[in-house]
Length: 452
Image: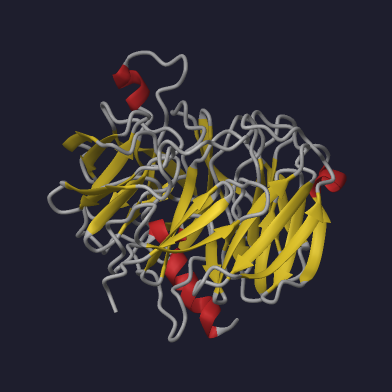
Protein backbone atom coordinates (compact mmCIF):
# COMPACT_ATOMS: atom_id res chain seq x y z
CA UNK A 1 0.00 0.00 0.00
CA UNK A 2 1.24 3.51 -0.81
CA UNK A 3 1.82 6.29 1.69
CA UNK A 4 -1.05 8.29 0.21
CA UNK A 5 -3.43 5.38 0.75
CA UNK A 6 -2.47 5.13 4.41
CA UNK A 7 -2.86 8.86 4.88
CA UNK A 8 -6.42 8.92 3.62
CA UNK A 9 -7.22 5.71 5.43
CA UNK A 10 -6.07 7.23 8.72
CA UNK A 11 -8.14 10.31 7.99
CA UNK A 12 -11.24 8.27 7.21
CA UNK A 13 -11.03 5.38 9.64
CA UNK A 14 -9.27 6.70 12.73
CA UNK A 15 -11.54 7.14 15.70
CA UNK A 16 -13.00 10.33 17.05
CA UNK A 17 -13.35 10.19 20.82
CA UNK A 18 -10.36 12.35 21.63
CA UNK A 19 -11.79 15.42 19.85
CA UNK A 20 -14.09 16.68 22.57
CA UNK A 21 -14.18 20.32 21.65
CA UNK A 22 -16.97 21.01 19.22
CA UNK A 23 -20.61 21.89 19.13
CA UNK A 24 -23.21 19.87 17.34
CA UNK A 25 -24.75 18.84 14.14
CA UNK A 26 -25.91 16.45 11.83
CA UNK A 27 -25.18 13.50 9.51
CA UNK A 28 -22.23 11.26 10.28
CA UNK A 29 -19.42 13.23 11.75
CA UNK A 30 -17.56 11.01 14.17
CA UNK A 31 -15.32 7.97 14.60
CA UNK A 32 -13.42 6.47 17.49
CA UNK A 33 -10.14 8.17 18.50
CA UNK A 34 -10.07 10.64 15.71
CA UNK A 35 -7.65 12.08 13.30
CA UNK A 36 -8.58 15.12 11.28
CA UNK A 37 -8.76 15.10 7.52
CA UNK A 38 -5.21 14.37 6.39
CA UNK A 39 -3.05 16.73 4.38
CA UNK A 40 -0.68 15.48 1.71
CA UNK A 41 1.99 17.96 0.72
CA UNK A 42 1.03 19.69 -2.49
CA UNK A 43 -2.34 17.92 -2.65
CA UNK A 44 -5.88 18.55 -1.52
CA UNK A 45 -6.88 16.64 1.64
CA UNK A 46 -8.49 13.36 0.64
CA UNK A 47 -12.13 12.39 1.13
CA UNK A 48 -12.09 8.81 -0.17
CA UNK A 49 -15.60 7.63 0.73
CA UNK A 50 -19.13 8.63 1.69
CA UNK A 51 -19.12 11.25 4.49
CA UNK A 52 -15.32 11.52 4.68
CA UNK A 53 -15.40 15.29 5.23
CA UNK A 54 -18.02 14.81 7.92
CA UNK A 55 -16.64 11.94 9.96
CA UNK A 56 -13.51 13.89 10.90
CA UNK A 57 -13.48 17.51 11.98
CA UNK A 58 -12.18 19.74 9.19
CA UNK A 59 -9.49 21.64 11.10
CA UNK A 60 -9.12 24.56 8.77
CA UNK A 61 -11.20 27.52 7.72
CA UNK A 62 -13.83 27.14 5.01
CA UNK A 63 -15.85 29.97 3.48
CA UNK A 64 -18.81 31.13 5.55
CA UNK A 65 -20.55 33.53 3.16
CA UNK A 66 -21.42 33.21 -0.53
CA UNK A 67 -24.21 33.84 -3.01
CA UNK A 68 -24.98 33.10 -6.66
CA UNK A 69 -22.95 36.23 -7.50
CA UNK A 70 -19.99 35.92 -5.13
CA UNK A 71 -17.69 33.31 -3.62
CA UNK A 72 -18.27 30.65 -6.29
CA UNK A 73 -14.86 30.11 -7.90
CA UNK A 74 -15.94 27.47 -10.42
CA UNK A 75 -18.85 25.28 -11.40
CA UNK A 76 -18.87 22.00 -13.31
CA UNK A 77 -21.74 20.42 -15.20
CA UNK A 78 -22.39 16.74 -14.46
CA UNK A 79 -23.76 14.54 -17.25
CA UNK A 80 -27.26 13.41 -16.40
CA UNK A 81 -28.24 13.46 -12.73
CA UNK A 82 -26.94 11.88 -9.55
CA UNK A 83 -27.38 11.84 -5.80
CA UNK A 84 -24.01 10.55 -4.62
CA UNK A 85 -21.38 12.43 -2.63
CA UNK A 86 -18.23 13.62 -4.42
CA UNK A 87 -15.09 11.85 -3.26
CA UNK A 88 -11.64 13.43 -3.29
CA UNK A 89 -8.48 11.37 -3.89
CA UNK A 90 -5.50 11.18 -6.24
CA UNK A 91 -5.84 14.97 -6.85
CA UNK A 92 -9.30 14.48 -8.34
CA UNK A 93 -12.93 15.06 -7.43
CA UNK A 94 -14.98 12.06 -8.57
CA UNK A 95 -18.77 11.88 -8.87
CA UNK A 96 -21.28 9.42 -10.29
CA UNK A 97 -24.45 10.06 -12.29
CA UNK A 98 -26.99 8.46 -14.60
CA UNK A 99 -28.67 9.62 -17.81
CA UNK A 100 -31.45 8.54 -20.17
CA UNK A 101 -35.19 8.09 -19.80
CA UNK A 102 -34.64 4.61 -18.38
CA UNK A 103 -31.40 5.44 -16.56
CA UNK A 104 -29.84 3.87 -19.64
CA UNK A 105 -26.27 4.96 -18.88
CA UNK A 106 -24.07 5.34 -15.85
CA UNK A 107 -21.17 7.79 -15.58
CA UNK A 108 -18.13 8.15 -13.33
CA UNK A 109 -16.53 11.57 -13.86
CA UNK A 110 -13.34 13.13 -12.48
CA UNK A 111 -12.81 16.88 -12.16
CA UNK A 112 -9.71 18.94 -11.43
CA UNK A 113 -10.05 20.55 -7.95
CA UNK A 114 -8.16 23.61 -9.18
CA UNK A 115 -10.63 24.77 -11.81
CA UNK A 116 -13.40 22.18 -12.20
CA UNK A 117 -12.24 21.05 -15.63
CA UNK A 118 -13.16 17.50 -16.59
CA UNK A 119 -10.22 15.10 -16.42
CA UNK A 120 -11.92 11.92 -17.60
CA UNK A 121 -15.24 10.10 -17.70
CA UNK A 122 -16.05 6.40 -17.67
CA UNK A 123 -19.44 5.39 -19.10
CA UNK A 124 -21.27 2.09 -18.68
CA UNK A 125 -24.57 0.83 -20.03
CA UNK A 126 -27.19 0.01 -17.41
CA UNK A 127 -28.03 -3.70 -17.79
CA UNK A 128 -31.22 -3.19 -15.72
CA UNK A 129 -32.98 -0.08 -17.09
CA UNK A 130 -35.62 1.55 -14.88
CA UNK A 131 -37.75 4.67 -15.38
CA UNK A 132 -35.74 7.77 -14.48
CA UNK A 133 -38.01 9.67 -12.05
CA UNK A 134 -37.63 11.60 -8.78
CA UNK A 135 -39.28 8.67 -6.99
CA UNK A 136 -36.32 6.31 -7.41
CA UNK A 137 -32.63 6.50 -6.61
CA UNK A 138 -30.45 7.94 -9.36
CA UNK A 139 -26.77 7.09 -9.04
CA UNK A 140 -27.18 7.40 -5.28
CA UNK A 141 -24.38 5.07 -4.05
CA UNK A 142 -21.14 6.98 -3.44
CA UNK A 143 -17.92 5.54 -4.89
CA UNK A 144 -14.74 4.90 -2.88
CA UNK A 145 -11.07 5.55 -3.54
CA UNK A 146 -8.46 2.83 -3.25
CA UNK A 147 -4.69 2.77 -3.57
CA UNK A 148 -5.03 1.90 -7.27
CA UNK A 149 -7.86 4.27 -8.14
CA UNK A 150 -11.62 4.11 -7.59
CA UNK A 151 -14.50 1.66 -7.26
CA UNK A 152 -18.01 2.78 -8.25
CA UNK A 153 -21.36 1.06 -7.80
CA UNK A 154 -24.78 1.76 -9.31
CA UNK A 155 -28.29 0.66 -8.38
CA UNK A 156 -28.62 -1.31 -11.63
CA UNK A 157 -25.94 -3.71 -10.40
CA UNK A 158 -22.91 -2.27 -12.22
CA UNK A 159 -19.72 -2.43 -10.14
CA UNK A 160 -16.61 -0.92 -11.74
CA UNK A 161 -12.92 -0.60 -10.92
CA UNK A 162 -11.16 2.44 -12.41
CA UNK A 163 -7.52 3.52 -12.30
CA UNK A 164 -6.36 7.05 -11.50
CA UNK A 165 -6.26 7.99 -15.22
CA UNK A 166 -9.83 6.92 -15.91
CA UNK A 167 -9.05 3.49 -17.32
CA UNK A 168 -11.55 0.74 -16.54
CA UNK A 169 -9.68 -2.11 -14.82
CA UNK A 170 -12.60 -4.47 -14.19
CA UNK A 171 -16.40 -4.53 -14.26
CA UNK A 172 -19.09 -6.76 -12.78
CA UNK A 173 -22.86 -7.05 -13.27
CA UNK A 174 -24.30 -8.10 -9.91
CA UNK A 175 -27.78 -8.52 -11.42
CA UNK A 176 -26.44 -11.11 -13.85
CA UNK A 177 -24.61 -12.85 -11.01
CA UNK A 178 -27.15 -12.70 -8.19
CA UNK A 179 -30.50 -11.68 -9.69
CA UNK A 180 -32.57 -8.48 -9.96
CA UNK A 181 -32.16 -5.65 -7.47
CA UNK A 182 -35.71 -4.74 -6.52
CA UNK A 183 -36.00 -2.29 -3.65
CA UNK A 184 -38.52 0.30 -2.54
CA UNK A 185 -37.52 3.59 -4.24
CA UNK A 186 -34.32 1.93 -5.46
CA UNK A 187 -30.95 1.20 -3.94
CA UNK A 188 -28.87 3.98 -2.37
CA UNK A 189 -26.33 2.35 -0.03
CA UNK A 190 -22.84 3.71 -0.66
CA UNK A 191 -19.70 1.60 -0.68
CA UNK A 192 -17.44 1.26 2.38
CA UNK A 193 -13.69 0.60 2.25
CA UNK A 194 -10.71 -0.41 4.38
CA UNK A 195 -7.15 -1.45 3.54
CA UNK A 196 -8.06 -4.90 2.22
CA UNK A 197 -11.66 -4.77 1.05
CA UNK A 198 -14.47 -2.77 -0.52
CA UNK A 199 -17.92 -3.51 0.94
CA UNK A 200 -21.12 -3.59 -1.15
CA UNK A 201 -24.53 -3.76 0.55
CA UNK A 202 -27.48 -4.78 -1.65
CA UNK A 203 -30.56 -4.59 0.56
CA UNK A 204 -33.20 -5.77 -1.92
CA UNK A 205 -36.69 -7.21 -1.39
CA UNK A 206 -35.61 -10.84 -1.79
CA UNK A 207 -32.35 -12.46 -0.72
CA UNK A 208 -30.46 -9.27 0.21
CA UNK A 209 -26.70 -9.59 0.61
CA UNK A 210 -23.44 -7.94 1.61
CA UNK A 211 -20.28 -8.47 -0.43
CA UNK A 212 -16.64 -7.88 0.38
CA UNK A 213 -14.53 -7.58 -2.75
CA UNK A 214 -10.84 -7.27 -3.56
CA UNK A 215 -10.34 -3.67 -4.77
CA UNK A 216 -7.79 -4.29 -7.53
CA UNK A 217 -9.61 -7.21 -9.20
CA UNK A 218 -13.24 -6.92 -8.05
CA UNK A 219 -13.21 -10.58 -7.01
CA UNK A 220 -15.52 -11.64 -4.18
CA UNK A 221 -13.84 -12.28 -0.82
CA UNK A 222 -17.06 -13.19 0.98
CA UNK A 223 -20.84 -12.90 0.55
CA UNK A 224 -23.24 -12.80 3.50
CA UNK A 225 -27.01 -12.39 3.91
CA UNK A 226 -28.38 -8.86 4.25
CA UNK A 227 -31.08 -7.82 6.70
CA UNK A 228 -34.35 -8.19 4.80
CA UNK A 229 -35.84 -4.76 5.50
CA UNK A 230 -36.07 -1.33 3.86
CA UNK A 231 -32.78 0.57 3.96
CA UNK A 232 -31.28 3.61 2.25
CA UNK A 233 -28.45 3.91 4.77
CA UNK A 234 -24.86 2.89 4.07
CA UNK A 235 -22.62 0.35 5.82
CA UNK A 236 -20.14 1.85 8.27
CA UNK A 237 -17.02 0.46 9.91
CA UNK A 238 -17.15 1.00 13.68
CA UNK A 239 -14.18 0.53 16.03
CA UNK A 240 -14.95 -2.07 18.71
CA UNK A 241 -12.04 -2.78 21.05
CA UNK A 242 -9.00 -3.50 18.89
CA UNK A 243 -11.06 -4.56 15.88
CA UNK A 244 -13.86 -3.21 13.72
CA UNK A 245 -17.44 -4.20 12.93
CA UNK A 246 -19.22 -3.52 9.65
CA UNK A 247 -22.53 -2.08 10.85
CA UNK A 248 -25.64 -2.04 8.63
CA UNK A 249 -28.90 -0.36 9.66
CA UNK A 250 -32.33 -1.08 8.13
CA UNK A 251 -35.84 -0.47 9.44
CA UNK A 252 -36.26 -2.37 12.70
CA UNK A 253 -32.81 -4.00 12.74
CA UNK A 254 -29.12 -3.18 12.99
CA UNK A 255 -26.46 -5.85 12.49
CA UNK A 256 -22.71 -6.01 12.99
CA UNK A 257 -20.56 -8.15 10.66
CA UNK A 258 -16.96 -9.29 10.91
CA UNK A 259 -15.24 -7.35 8.07
CA UNK A 260 -12.78 -10.20 7.48
CA UNK A 261 -15.31 -13.04 7.13
CA UNK A 262 -18.82 -11.59 6.86
CA UNK A 263 -19.92 -13.49 9.98
CA UNK A 264 -22.84 -11.82 11.74
CA UNK A 265 -21.53 -10.94 15.20
CA UNK A 266 -24.68 -9.41 16.64
CA UNK A 267 -28.18 -8.21 15.82
CA UNK A 268 -30.16 -5.41 17.49
CA UNK A 269 -33.93 -5.12 16.99
CA UNK A 270 -35.09 -2.51 19.51
CA UNK A 271 -35.43 0.29 16.95
CA UNK A 272 -37.87 1.57 14.34
CA UNK A 273 -37.99 4.00 11.37
CA UNK A 274 -34.20 3.81 10.93
CA UNK A 275 -34.39 3.59 7.16
CA UNK A 276 -32.04 6.34 6.00
CA UNK A 277 -29.46 7.36 8.60
CA UNK A 278 -26.03 5.77 8.49
CA UNK A 279 -24.57 4.78 11.90
CA UNK A 280 -22.20 7.50 13.15
CA UNK A 281 -19.10 6.43 15.09
CA UNK A 282 -19.01 8.15 18.48
CA UNK A 283 -16.10 6.59 20.34
CA UNK A 284 -14.85 3.04 20.60
CA UNK A 285 -17.78 0.65 20.59
CA UNK A 286 -20.33 3.44 20.22
CA UNK A 287 -22.35 4.98 17.43
CA UNK A 288 -25.13 7.53 17.14
CA UNK A 289 -28.17 6.44 15.18
CA UNK A 290 -30.94 8.53 13.68
CA UNK A 291 -34.52 7.65 12.80
CA UNK A 292 -37.42 9.57 11.32
CA UNK A 293 -40.78 10.34 12.85
CA UNK A 294 -42.28 7.95 10.28
CA UNK A 295 -45.47 8.26 8.30
CA UNK A 296 -47.43 6.29 10.86
CA UNK A 297 -45.42 7.08 13.98
CA UNK A 298 -47.23 7.96 17.16
CA UNK A 299 -46.34 10.76 19.56
CA UNK A 300 -43.14 12.72 19.13
CA UNK A 301 -41.54 10.98 22.10
CA UNK A 302 -42.31 7.57 20.67
CA UNK A 303 -40.68 8.48 17.36
CA UNK A 304 -37.67 10.09 19.06
CA UNK A 305 -36.95 7.01 21.16
CA UNK A 306 -35.27 5.28 18.22
CA UNK A 307 -32.73 8.13 18.02
CA UNK A 308 -29.81 7.89 20.40
CA UNK A 309 -26.41 6.50 21.28
CA UNK A 310 -25.89 2.74 20.91
CA UNK A 311 -23.08 0.91 22.67
CA UNK A 312 -21.43 -2.41 21.76
CA UNK A 313 -19.82 -4.32 24.60
CA UNK A 314 -18.28 -7.78 24.79
CA UNK A 315 -19.20 -10.43 27.34
CA UNK A 316 -16.96 -13.43 26.80
CA UNK A 317 -17.51 -14.63 23.24
CA UNK A 318 -20.72 -12.68 22.82
CA UNK A 319 -21.43 -9.04 21.97
CA UNK A 320 -24.11 -7.10 23.80
CA UNK A 321 -25.74 -4.14 22.05
CA UNK A 322 -28.11 -1.61 23.59
CA UNK A 323 -28.91 2.07 23.85
CA UNK A 324 -26.76 4.04 26.23
CA UNK A 325 -29.44 6.71 25.93
CA UNK A 326 -32.47 7.50 23.80
CA UNK A 327 -33.61 10.93 22.61
CA UNK A 328 -36.82 12.37 23.99
CA UNK A 329 -37.76 14.75 21.17
CA UNK A 330 -35.04 14.72 18.51
CA UNK A 331 -35.61 12.94 15.18
CA UNK A 332 -33.94 12.87 11.76
CA UNK A 333 -35.00 12.33 8.17
CA UNK A 334 -32.46 11.62 5.42
CA UNK A 335 -29.54 13.37 7.09
CA UNK A 336 -27.77 11.29 9.74
CA UNK A 337 -27.08 12.78 13.16
CA UNK A 338 -23.53 13.89 13.88
CA UNK A 339 -21.17 13.90 16.83
CA UNK A 340 -19.32 17.14 17.46
CA UNK A 341 -17.18 17.23 20.59
CA UNK A 342 -19.38 16.45 23.58
CA UNK A 343 -22.68 16.80 21.75
CA UNK A 344 -24.74 14.83 19.28
CA UNK A 345 -26.84 16.79 16.81
CA UNK A 346 -30.06 15.80 15.07
CA UNK A 347 -31.93 17.82 12.42
CA UNK A 348 -35.60 17.01 11.89
CA UNK A 349 -37.65 17.40 8.70
CA UNK A 350 -38.51 21.04 9.55
CA UNK A 351 -34.87 22.07 10.04
CA UNK A 352 -35.02 22.09 13.83
CA UNK A 353 -31.57 21.39 15.27
CA UNK A 354 -31.41 19.45 18.53
CA UNK A 355 -28.15 19.33 20.46
CA UNK A 356 -27.88 16.54 23.02
CA UNK A 357 -25.14 15.76 25.53
CA UNK A 358 -23.18 12.86 24.09
CA UNK A 359 -22.77 11.06 27.41
CA UNK A 360 -26.25 11.53 28.91
CA UNK A 361 -28.56 12.41 26.02
CA UNK A 362 -29.83 15.44 27.91
CA UNK A 363 -30.98 18.26 25.66
CA UNK A 364 -28.44 21.08 25.47
CA UNK A 365 -30.35 23.31 23.05
CA UNK A 366 -32.96 23.36 20.34
CA UNK A 367 -33.10 25.87 17.49
CA UNK A 368 -35.16 26.23 14.34
CA UNK A 369 -32.86 26.96 11.39
CA UNK A 370 -33.49 28.36 7.93
CA UNK A 371 -31.99 25.25 6.32
CA UNK A 372 -35.25 23.35 6.37
CA UNK A 373 -34.95 19.65 5.64
CA UNK A 374 -31.38 18.36 5.43
CA UNK A 375 -30.43 15.53 3.07
CA UNK A 376 -26.67 16.13 2.94
CA UNK A 377 -24.37 15.28 5.81
CA UNK A 378 -23.66 18.39 7.88
CA UNK A 379 -20.03 19.39 8.12
CA UNK A 380 -18.00 20.72 11.06
CA UNK A 381 -14.85 22.82 11.02
CA UNK A 382 -12.82 24.02 13.99
CA UNK A 383 -15.12 27.05 14.19
CA UNK A 384 -18.34 26.38 12.37
CA UNK A 385 -21.13 23.98 11.66
CA UNK A 386 -22.65 23.73 8.18
CA UNK A 387 -26.26 22.65 7.57
CA UNK A 388 -27.05 22.02 3.90
CA UNK A 389 -30.77 22.37 3.34
CA UNK A 390 -31.82 20.26 0.38
CA UNK A 391 -33.75 23.15 -1.20
CA UNK A 392 -30.55 25.16 -1.50
CA UNK A 393 -30.05 27.16 1.71
CA UNK A 394 -26.86 26.46 3.66
CA UNK A 395 -26.84 27.72 7.23
CA UNK A 396 -23.47 28.32 8.89
CA UNK A 397 -23.57 28.17 12.68
CA UNK A 398 -20.96 29.23 15.22
CA UNK A 399 -20.18 25.95 16.94
CA UNK A 400 -19.41 27.61 20.29
CA UNK A 401 -22.30 30.03 20.70
CA UNK A 402 -24.82 28.30 18.47
CA UNK A 403 -25.59 31.59 16.72
CA UNK A 404 -26.32 31.65 13.00
CA UNK A 405 -23.36 33.21 11.17
CA UNK A 406 -24.88 33.28 7.68
CA UNK A 407 -27.51 31.88 5.34
CA UNK A 408 -26.24 31.19 1.81
CA UNK A 409 -27.35 29.93 -1.58
CA UNK A 410 -25.57 28.92 -4.80
CA UNK A 411 -28.62 29.39 -7.01
CA UNK A 412 -31.48 31.86 -6.73
CA UNK A 413 -34.55 30.49 -5.00
CA UNK A 414 -36.75 31.64 -7.87
CA UNK A 415 -34.72 29.78 -10.50
CA UNK A 416 -36.72 27.36 -12.66
CA UNK A 417 -36.37 23.85 -11.33
CA UNK A 418 -35.13 20.98 -13.43
CA UNK A 419 -37.40 18.37 -14.97
CA UNK A 420 -35.90 15.64 -12.81
CA UNK A 421 -37.51 16.68 -9.57
CA UNK A 422 -36.03 20.10 -8.94
CA UNK A 423 -32.66 21.37 -7.80
CA UNK A 424 -31.47 19.71 -4.60
CA UNK A 425 -28.27 19.78 -2.58
CA UNK A 426 -27.31 16.17 -2.00
CA UNK A 427 -23.82 16.47 -0.53
CA UNK A 428 -20.90 18.70 0.40
CA UNK A 429 -17.20 17.98 0.74
CA UNK A 430 -14.19 19.99 1.91
CA UNK A 431 -11.44 20.25 -0.70
CA UNK A 432 -8.47 22.04 0.82
CA UNK A 433 -9.85 25.51 1.72
CA UNK A 434 -12.83 25.13 -0.63
CA UNK A 435 -16.30 23.83 0.00
CA UNK A 436 -17.74 21.84 -2.92
CA UNK A 437 -21.50 21.37 -3.05
CA UNK A 438 -23.10 18.69 -5.18
CA UNK A 439 -26.42 19.36 -6.88
CA UNK A 440 -27.97 16.60 -8.94
CA UNK A 441 -26.56 18.03 -12.16
CA UNK A 442 -23.75 20.36 -11.05
CA UNK A 443 -20.80 20.98 -8.74
CA UNK A 444 -20.24 24.35 -7.07
CA UNK A 445 -16.80 25.18 -5.65
CA UNK A 446 -16.91 27.91 -3.01
CA UNK A 447 -13.90 29.74 -1.61
CA UNK A 448 -13.15 32.75 0.51
CA UNK A 449 -12.08 35.16 -2.21
CA UNK A 450 -10.72 37.61 0.39
CA UNK A 451 -8.02 35.14 1.39
CA UNK A 452 -4.70 35.05 -0.54
